[in-house]
Image (cartoon, rainbow, N blue to C red; front, top):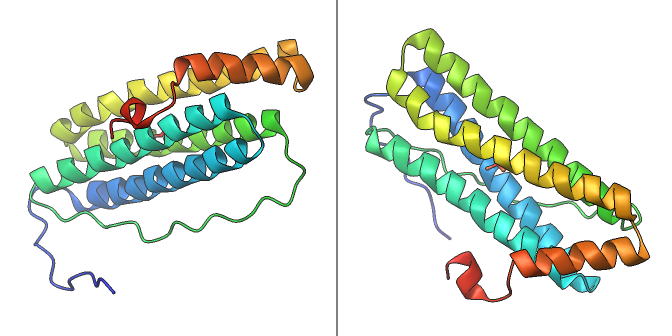
Length: 185
Ligand code: FEO
């Protein structure tokens, strides 16, 4: 089994509080990636191929967010902490499409709050480089939240059953085409 080296590169250029917050963010992005991966599998199992593709694409985006943060930390001659925890609990509740999107939005809002914490800390310690780097994430979160809000609003309008689910699944299939190319593989 792979073991993480005990000896790590001495952290050189990032304020330790900023580094700790970025490491927490890495964990959140990794968690989001696995959460959406699980939803992709669950929706596929239920026959919603469009929604499944949407969450697969989303999972891939979250992994890229984690990698973006990791490479930034290494660029700053510091050592990122590799997230170790991917366990996803089985959802005991009855399968409800709207609830999954609402939970996803809740999850995104937590991610946004965590990003804002990093930006606030950067301002406090005068780390303008990291603050500027984190701007991309601030914008990205706004887009992510809006994406989920739009799907939730549409589901509420056309209905969380029958025709509504058929339409949402069809729309998401059009915007999230099947195949490894769509997720950059
Ligand atoms: Fe990378 Fe949607 O948080």
